[in-house]
Length: 84
Image 1 (cartoon, rainbow, N blue to C red):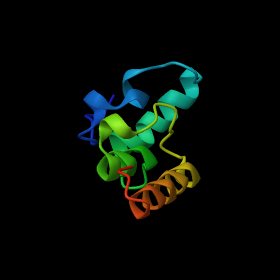
Image 2 (spheres, rainbow, N blue to C red; image 1 turned 45 degrees about the vertical axis):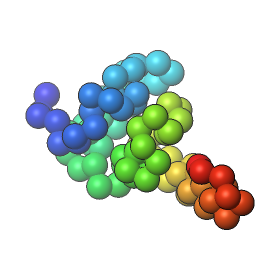
Image 3 (tube, rainbow, N blue to C red; image 1 turned 180 degrees about the horizontal axis):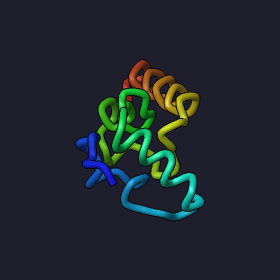
Image 4 (spheres, rainbow, N blue to C red; image 1 turned 120 degrees about the vertical axis):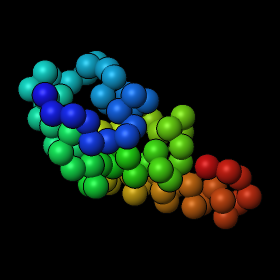
């Protein structure tokens, strides 16, 4: 396996857990998002935006729609005076 490109591998639940995903899906997504090019990883963008402890464990690297919903929710909370 190639050397990791993503600096968040050690703390990313998608990388550190196999729960809920087929081995084939895990391998393909890890190769793409963890070892090759993480620039389009929704999890990485969420970690950078909200911090690793505030990203749902179920968020996949391909969940861009869910990331957008989380960002919208965070903006609404800030507008109401609450932290996301």
